[in-house]
Amino acid sequence: MPLRSTATARQERLGTELRKMREAAGITARDTARLLGTDPAKVSHIEAGRLGVSEERLRRLAAFYECGDTALVEALVAMAVGNGRKGWWEAYRGVVSAWMLDIAEMEHHATGLRSIQLSHIPGLLQTEMYSRTVNAKAIPPLPPNDLEAHVAFQMERAQVLHRSTPVPYGAVIHEAALRMRFGGPKVTRQQLEHLLEVSRLGHVSVRVVPFAGGGYMGSGQVMHFAAGPVPQLDTVQTDSAHGVTMLHAAAQLGKYQARFEQLTEDSLDRERSQEFIRAVIRDL
Image (cartoon, rainbow, N blue to C red):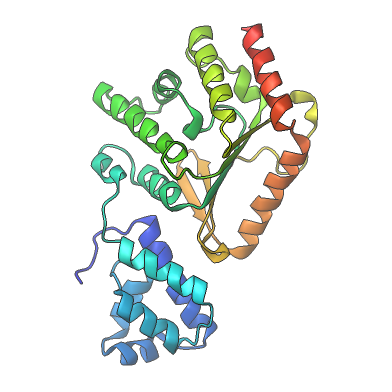
């Protein structure tokens, strides 16, 4: 297989998991290279996601590393086999940032999604007009054609909640996000009505944290949590002004799961959250 010029987050994740498996077995990259009949540099490329790995080779590595976790091995095999297939998001490569494509791929393969948002409606729940308004605030500003591409991309992302086998999704949204009037009252009303509609879907849970709900250390952090086919492949995505960070260390995952659970406890239940959203609409 040829070396990839740039690896996606999913390709890097597969390599990372193979490296963790090797290190847990106390086996060196040189020993692995001898098994595969190659050199340590190629092992490093595999573990960095720059070089693909076949199903046969992956199973050979898992056996060599004495990994007894069958579910994890099968999940990694599925990742390896699927890494050569192009998803819908590839049509936006070169227009939408690579990290946004990584998020779409992460969501596509997730078995469950959770979000915490404080200042705007989560991307998977945005309307076209709301998304256009938010993306129009990008720094530096997007060219008109790129702006429309970003909006179209956002709308396609949202289809993960509406496909024949939709992904279960839980969103905790702060009252501040509901009251921010991106695009003015008309756009905000349309967005909140859409939020209400989606929140009625059986696989979607929207919970509101009111201003009066209090807070705790770390409650000001947003996150997007994607559950993998096995817990070891869970991922947390966080945002910053410089882009996106993907976290998957066990301690990090546990910390963000605890934050989500704590905020969920501080939020209104589904029915009261819907009533709250309706009240915000009436205030417009």
